[in-house]
Length: 623
Ligand SMILES: [Ca+2]
Ligand SMILES: [Ca+2]
Figure 1 (cartoon, rainbow, N blue to C red):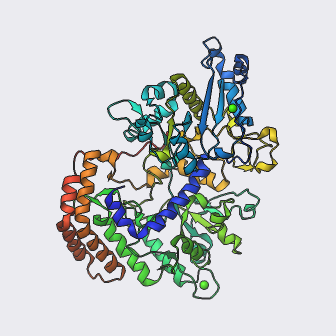
Figure 2: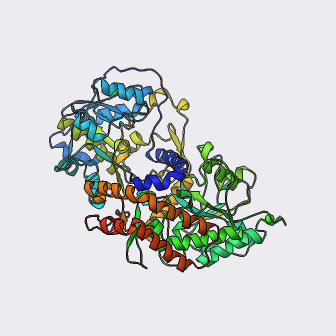
Figure 3: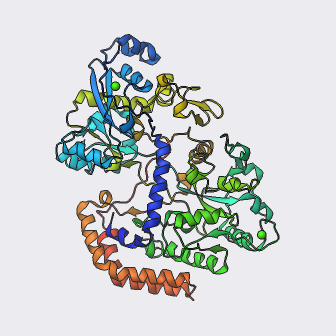
């Protein structure tokens, strides 16, 4: 993280932490981390019970391989830590299936990957399992490698044994080849993870549809697709939330916000509603990205750089002309009372509580929680379901891809910019004791998982058995799953062995989570929302795009001028929020002159427009 980012964001650290927390909660459901709730800690090694014959019969398409040498001839013991291994009990149903197919014995080490102390002690004793994620172990992948804990992974092996992953790398170049790269080689400190969220937005504009109808804004019926809800908890509200590609014009949104405040949209005869929540201009957070997005920039990312059409310069948000337009719009909406600030308290809690008053008509909703039946601590406080559960049972809602701005550069923030991720939290590290043969076996398991998702054997291992582990909420494999509580699963069907980290390299979302989640994902992909509406930075301040030398020099340069630049930014944000700006174009020019004189000019010349700082390339989103 750049020094700049740290300093500018000091005001919103708490909010960012909440963002991280909720982002975490979401990504867990996506990677389907299985919690195994057994307590005994049996570590006996079980001999594999594999026969070649059983392998050829379990999978029809391997007949051509039957005449070739058995690729799984050599037996391996493979130790691992992913997820809650502290409570893992050897010999689970799915574990045995994988062991038999691949001629291995999986051995889970009984330490949770959240157990900082346990993992630290493990490393201090010089131990590391064969395959693990050690996010909480206190050592980054390159440190583990330099200290002799891990082995490297050659690019060549991805090409040969994990072609699914290699193709993803090609589609996401250049950074995909750079995360975890051991400099000057074609080998990696570990296997970098992939997230499906680069294909997705974080927040979604959500309007009260019943209010829109009451104030005379109709969306054509054929443009509204109802989201069916199938869970026991929310089925009675099925079809009350719609998804649409229809977008209101910017001036229409402004008028809707007026009418949500002035025209009694809830029809109770009282002047008791308003359009939406807003924060002062100095507040920068993912929860206001959709507002900023109308003007072609995002609030939550300080490291995005934009190509400014007016000046021709590559500039950060605070010197981008879209920011000028944003502050004028925000201030106007606030001054008129159509959008209001929050009472004191923890931002996230107060925001959700304010939404749940039922007096607000527009939400920058967290897409992952729209109509989510589980995780009540979070989901029951969010729209739409929170309002239904609080008694507004007839409320209807419509979700759109973005809020359209006045120009042509409007859009939504992509959840993450890159498909690949590195660092301790996003890498599978491989113990130094692992042979090439064992590594190849594991890469084969990863590859098979990602390329055989419709195969019955793989479905049984990685999704479970219908009627035992889950039931379908609708059509099999074309709806979301209703999971059987672990305590109701017969002991012989106990699962857990399939949680060996296979999902960490999947670019595809888990579409079986819950029905709204599934429908929203499918809509995003089918209608290419990311391609149409994502706000793409021209460049992104980070070590991979700048190179270490330029990045380090930049941090030093920023530290030297930030003391002069930040007060200018803060002053403009405050005065514009307070409505103290009479002629925005004159004042904007003065503001830019001040910024450039205070050091921005040199930052632009030496860094932002430096040719060694490469332009950002968006990943391939659609196959
Ligand atoms: Ca085992
Ligand atoms: Ca009213």
